[in-house]
Image (tube, helix red, strand yellow):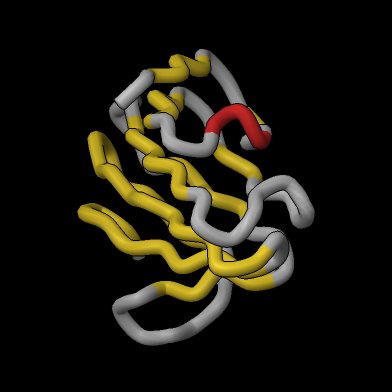
Length: 95
């Protein structure tokens, strides 16, 4: 899996599909960037929590809610997109 290392806050881009983003700042998922079938893994490369800011809809697979998510220290989460405004997120250290 190709790695995209980011040293600060970062907004995901279409070229991140199929990659792992090694994040050192908050991550934003904008609407209209990804297509159905795209997936991105986010890895927290810090000693603190990161926020994953959602676009329109980001369903957490643990309970079906759609909200911004927190990714704990060294946690990892994957977002699978079913539409250009809808993603499903799951992972370790995710709340």
